[in-house]
Image (cartoon, rainbow, N blue to C red; front, top):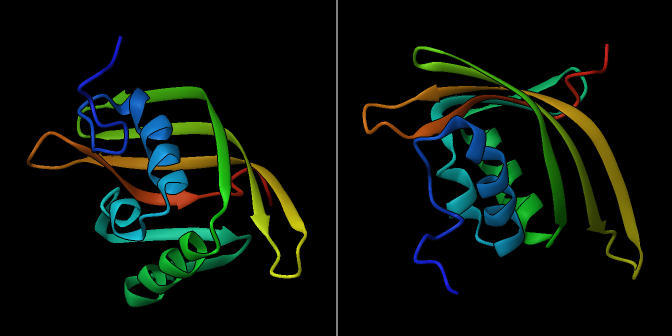
Length: 132
């Protein structure tokens, strides 16, 4: 049975955002990945280093262009009005450019915001939320 749902589209179910984001990331389409973020989103893909604005956009585009393979499992989710907190265990295999692969893992703490369209987007994407 086939589904008519595009698994890389935004959703009105906060619990589905992680799976859809992973599908978008694995599709290799940076613009689709960027659609999962609010305009003022903050990403922390390296402990202690926040990216915003054009720096965030450029980092997403560069990362997606490297054709990573991502897996993630939603561990916990909490919704309060138009905000949600997700705890996500993730793993990424990223080509290193020399024929090998770098394996990255972590536990992310992600804050989502529900937009006027009812769709959830990342306001804070903290890939290493369990790091001090």
